[in-house]
Image 1: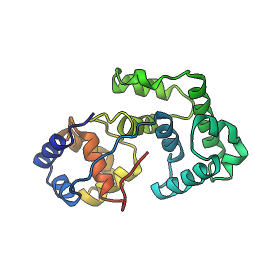
Image 2: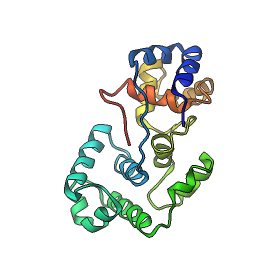
Image 3: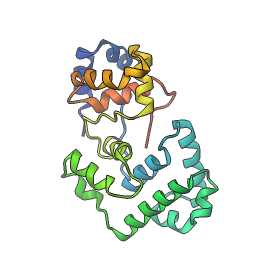
Length: 203
């Protein structure tokens, strides 16, 4: 879990850009998601699309299934899921994930005792879950404090806007600059996302 107040103090001292952003959103913070399956399902739905598009598709899936659970996903079937706007590949990923939860071949409760790297490795071994999806799980479900999703499009766009970095060099700049955020890179990332979106990002 994250000591949010301590993290904000650390980031505000080390980064004037973040200090300004943090002051713009008083009282707001990352709210961890308690449902492991839902966090991973939302992350799969959100792969490589905008937050707005992901929210729209998720809402359609939730309406169709009557609540996104492993049982409701497998019971809906591929054609039903496709009708919500999911790609063929994402339907496959989501169905495999639901099946794994139903069969208990993955045990999220055990992950709380493991390192970020161990959890990423286990998740990435599952078909359809890459590094970005695993990082969203670490941030939004386990609330690990020092996660930097370096490939996240929203994060990179926010850095270009807030720091004035060139798009061609933003990844390199972020890798170097983020060292000053440690050990609270998750909190820095959340505020950079927050600076772009009218509502907090959630998975």
